[in-house]
Image 1 (cartoon, rainbow, N blue to C red):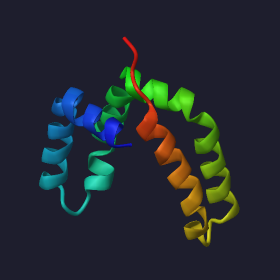
Image 2: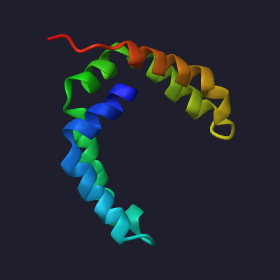
Image 3: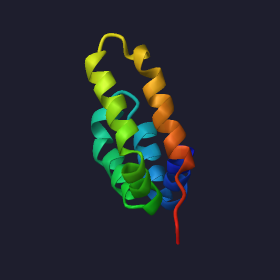
Image 4: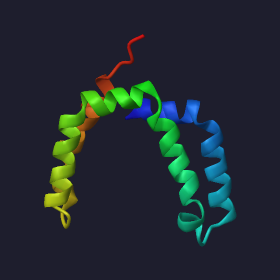
Length: 97
């Protein structure tokens, strides 16, 4: 997960800066006003090879985590082991050249 955050900060700096400026300028309505900019950050980060690799290599633990969230909407704390498994997987992913 740290890798995905690092990728976003490194390769999507412009998108992050625009989003940050929007949030700062719209303290009462930033969720609505800045939604398209947030989606731009997601699109930018999703295009990077490390994020695509995490999605591929860690699809199974992520799916288990999502199922747990759906089954435990009122008690998401029950899914901590699932999220930990996904994060362990994501931390081990390396981009090959």
